[in-house]
Length: 354
Ligand code: ATP
Picture 1 (spheres, rainbow, N blue to C red):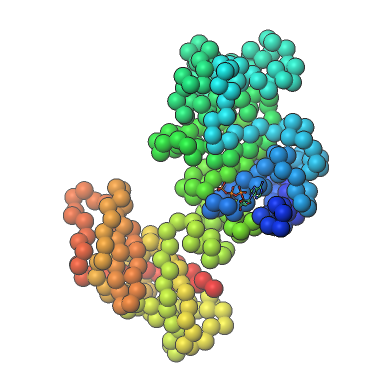
Picture 2 (cartoon, rainbow, N blue to C red):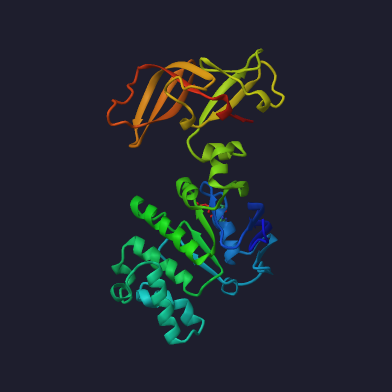
């Protein structure tokens, strides 16, 4: 990796006796879009607030653009921030909101006006129609776009987004996240995006930091995090996962439901008779005997959920149940509860959990 632009080094944070962030390390490249993903209370916001300068770390340091900013005030860090709640000033117009930071910094009037117009253009709200409106005259999505424009107007080097979409409805959330990503790419601004929504993180990030209990569990691309989870927590938190409890047989295969799985080199010292937990994504399993699959299980359909483009089917096999996804085909009726079926998958797709 080239010289990181933003570097979080051995950062810790305690509130009283509670340590909420422990030895957090992360290097972010210039122009990179990194998401912090994790359940409520895992410390995402606390790390973000330390990068912003709203909290001081109990240990470690934060470097931005080669400069140690650990003890600098927020306004000395060249950072723009957008929060979850629409934090616009209610008594200022859209244009005044966007120009606020520039005015505080003493930027001349004409320069503010042109920067505000430029920002309105970037967020695709026509200045003539929106510049003189007040926040209460805007939808939630429009308010968040203004909050983004306000954060970007002073041309910060780093953009910090703390769950900026979580108060919006589903459709607006998806379109605005794509817009944020495209603006971020266009401006090439180094960005940290905090979210507890895995689909959001998977869809727009260059890299994702999955956090749990104040620590980074795994750092990687969406593809790596989803397909090669490093820990049991990551495997369970990101995506839907089948956890299969099996037992290692004398044959060296793991018995699960009515099938046997060859884990070979993944077995890592396990001995016959040992109980093992295996994980498998629903999309790795076929409701069929797929050519090339080496694991075949007989079972019965226990549940069918129609999700639109895919149908999620639960199949009971022996004492186990697996979920799998099949594509919806308008010409074929969906599977029915009670149908006797066979499912197959490849041992190579099975992850061993410890
Ligand atoms: P959420 O998604 O719910 O916002 P999060 O992952 O962002 O969660 P944080 O807000 O970073 O989590 O909080 C991490 C932990 O630190 C929580 O247990 C929280 O209660 C605690 N915490 C945060 N701020 C303070 C504070 N000022 N004083 C005491 N405890 C705090």
